[in-house]
Image (cartoon, rainbow, N blue to C red):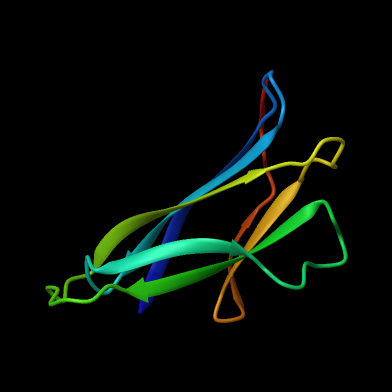
Length: 109
């Protein structure tokens, strides 16, 4: 159902007031406009707490959809607990295969 993933970006919003937030976005090509993409925290996380692992899931909404490759954007936001370490990288998986690795996470402060 997934053909291409591009334009992955992540950033940390550390502007006052607290709490800090991590944002991740990417573009996914899917089989039709009725496919909804979403990211969840992967369980279990890896051994490095500075790298966030996410799973990409695709859900086909009910109804009749034209079968045409369509680009959809997926977004993920995570509020960081106080005094938690800031992430240095994000890995994104789909069907247990890594599809993206983001190792440049700018801070917006």
